[in-house]
Amino acid sequence: MEYILLTGGAGYIGSHTALELVNAGFNVISFDNYSNSSTEALNRVQQLTDKKIISIEGDIRDPEALRQLFTHYKVTAVVHFAGLKAVGESTQYPLHYYDNNVTGTVTLCQVMREFKIKKLVFSSSATVYGDAKQVPIPETTPRSATNPYGQSKLMIEHILEDLVAAEPDWAISLLRYFNPVGAHHSGRIGEDPNGIPNNLMPFISQVAVGKRDQLSVFGNNYPTPDGTGVRDYIHVVDLALGHVKALQYLNKNNGITAINLGTGVGYSVLDMVNAFSQVNKVAVPYQIVPRRPGDIATCYAQPDKAATLLGWRAEKTLEDMVRDSWHWQSTNPNGYN
Ligand code: NAD
Ligand code: WQD
Image (tube, rainbow, N blue to C red; front, side, top):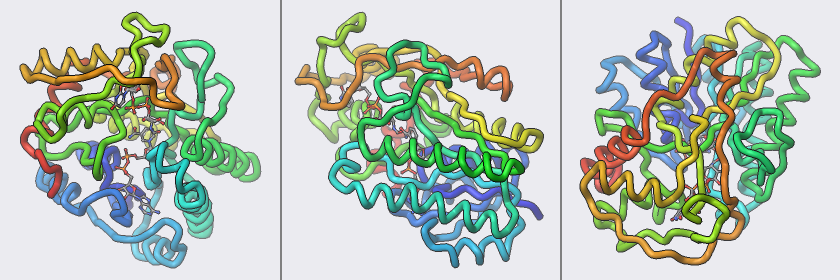
């Protein structure tokens, strides 16, 4: 039997992708150290699909664990989600971020190479565009980073580009996600952040469910229509389907390609708050506070390359995003616990 390996497969995007890969007929193995996830996520994916997902606990910085995995299972491609993703934390613990994200990716690729596995989908991020001068943002935009997390993603993109330059038989997709939100429509899997959420949507959901008093809106004096920050929010199920398409693309195309996964539409913080409360008929109290250091005014994708190369476009609406976020949060107020 042939398998797709998901590093970080138990995480937010990994678990939703595991579900869509199984639905598309792939056999899936997850390899995760559970540093930011729970074994329960993939239990639920198994319940939803009625298919077995092999879950292995391990760290991508451990080459022996990866060798054992590749010896036991015939893996044809790797979707590499495993990584740390909190921007603020990355400024406090840069070495931890570089070790986990950069060293981890190098170790993973070295062991893949030993086993002649040369198809890789990498979870990159719109963060590699830094503060882009123009929107919508095409993949050709010059890259930069403003914090160690973003720097780690940028370094990995360069490392993978160098790898393909040296060994053109690799097939690698750098998927640059914009702002993933929402949850599977079943409400059984979703985003389960540790502690106080850094990101907007889980914070709104936790205010709505009564776990937090109010949302702090970070600044209302940006050069945007209502003064609050504008982002390209993408439904996590659309994002997951983009990975299925990327894997199909890698079966036919060697080399390395960067592809935006976004909708091409920007919504402000207040658009998100208003949509959430109107669609779900629930109050989201908020106050305006000063800007968060490092935030940019506006960021949204030019999404056409994904349509041309992968035949993929985001299809879900803002209403789907806020409804599905709330369905997950309201039926699982304490996440997977
Ligand atoms: P997540 O934290 O839910 O998932 C990451 C998973 O990787 C977790 O299950 C974690 O336990 C695991 N992991 C971390 N380090 C590991 C290691 N050394 N070995 C094995 N497993 C390890 O995050 P997510 O939102 O699902 O993000 C997935 C990927 O997408 C990350 O690489 C992230 O940087 C990237 N990304 C996320 C966003 C976002 O806003 N969620 C946006 C752009 C890019
Ligand atoms: C969205 C908007 C905030 C929280 C981050 C990473 C990026 C990527 C996605 C991984 C902004 C505002 C937020 C709050 C608020 N991750 N906001 N109150 O900053 O666009 O991107 O996650 O790659 O790299 O930087 O996402 O959800 O934190 O913020 O007003 O409590 O919501 O100012 O305008 P961001 P976010």
